[in-house]
Image (tube, rainbow, N blue to C red):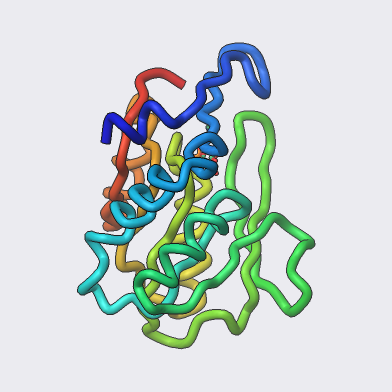
Length: 176
Ligand code: AMP
């Protein structure tokens, strides 16, 4: 996965001082790299009978759509508050300062459907945890969660493991 790591651009102090922003647009723009990332993110779940991928706005949409196509399953968008046109259920999650809300259509998931959560990066795991809670509240079963990047120092993978959710990640970066 070294080749994937090299395709990720790091932008220091964005969006604020002290944050190393891991920019995947450089990976998405590379034909071979994109194919490799999608294949590797989907592979562990090929025999997992996934009914739908739940992708987290916005980079989780790009990766999640391609993974859903590869797995032959549906795609469910999880969006920031106020963006979805139909009736929604929402889930709050903590940010460094304050809270945010993500939403999903209330009828997006049927009882016991098997759902794979997708995003580009897991840091504290707060966003993914909120997505997992939305899926579970809708009657879905979490098959796992798949990300390009893990920031292990922020503990997200461990946090999801404590919820009984296994994370699959391709590259890891130390620090924030
Ligand atoms: P968290 O909820 O702390 O796991 O943060 C994960 C979400 O925030 C994902 O949707 C990421 O795209 C975004 N994110 C957090 N930290 C970074 C970072 N250092 N570089 C790029 N995106 C990040």
